[in-house]
Image (cartoon, rainbow, N blue to C red; front, side):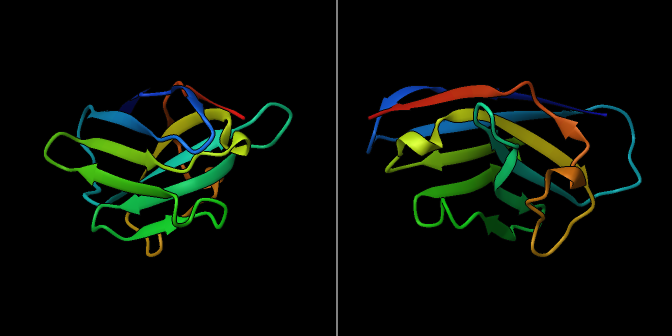
Length: 128
């Protein structure tokens, strides 16, 4: 079992920056050692979409809409996932979710159906 807790959302003006954090707590034994973690977002009236993902060996994936603006990173010592978001746009407004799946994959998937552990989400609002 994996528990995920996001933080760092808020309201920012267009062009601004935010950093999201996701603290992961693993409970109980697992036969897997590798994993993927990802950031997803869901705007009102839209489907959830993958934003960025990283696997336990450091391979990364990004949605085209955020390439060059968002950076995913992880601190394996503290089991924390980060999403540094820069040059934010109003269309980045959404609830952002952290997700986890056991098993490494290159490149790490951006399809939400691949992930089976989810955080509660954090709201990011970008004003124009």
